[in-house]
Length: 411
Ligand code: ADP
Ligand code: ASP
Ligand code: MG
Image (cartoon, rainbow, N blue to C red; front, side):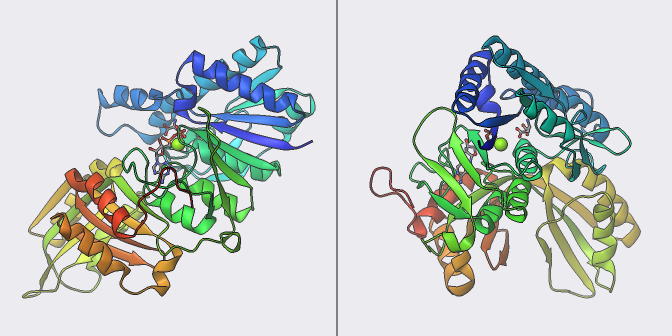
């Protein structure tokens, strides 16, 4: 008898009709002789609606209360799923993060799991009851509700699979797995049958939100067999596996678009030792993740300093940086959120010179200006104006010969 964790995302549980269809899928997996635990996201659009309610009051709600608010989305869905399973004649019990409990640190809105207790859920499974876990949420050691960051239900599912030593973690969504680019942006993207944890981690971290990057990280660490499938039918699926199991070795595995990007520039900053630390340390203390950093060449002892952060942290970061700007006597602070990051990802990048210039050429051919660049062994990223984001994905995808020329090609 196998133990399977099935996670259903927001679009798969968007209405009670959707929930009924998913419940039937869960039931049939159980009837085939498996043990099954279900993890659900909030019903599609619910998390955004809850956040919009808070935004009617303030741009900067306290993280603790924002978490208490959005966690209700998953609570509603888990209860509805358990009610539906019961109505179909299967015993089911909903479980919140605080009931498992799934313990996290106290970094609200993007908490990390510190401990997943499995006693309760294991007992429910032993009693032949289907546990329905509310994804995305946890509780701190001192009892505050937390969430794991947008898309975090995937991480709940993988953490559960790792702790229960499940045979497989199945992520059900609205596409048939992972593609060489978001199929909703790039119709010529190709389906990927197998992708390494490392490449998937890069794709997920750079905007391919089909999987939460922390989920991929945990799956690699605990070697959880992880598969992405569509809950709307379709034969295809994508397995996330170790690098040596991937036969196909294209230079670029995929192209991503990250939309949640903003930049802050400090103009005419005195160029002296310790300045970068002065600017960035308040952000580190506030757990704000700084991504790309550019410091211009110094002229007359002054320089300009620009960095990118997630847009969700922009208003907090502006508050912190305007104070630093005063302290260090910068001329002014500029902030912009009309930018996006386009990235080409693949393990072939480290061994293939010329990848960067091919990417830059494809953007210039579309007259797209590159504002910032960063590279690593596995990726090249360019910050560009938001309005060109989707065009840029298609251009870069084509430039690396990823476009699907025949109907439905897979790699
Ligand atoms: P769920 O609510 O099921 O968790 P998400 O919206 O979080 O669904 O993730 C699925 C979406 O991820 C797809 O609809 C697709 O638009 C997007 N996506 C982005 N990049 C990719 C990619 N490389 N392959 C597949 N889907 C992608
Ligand atoms: N409901 C949460 C979100 O919309 C978590 C998830 O869907 O995984 O981000
Ligand atoms: Mg998701």
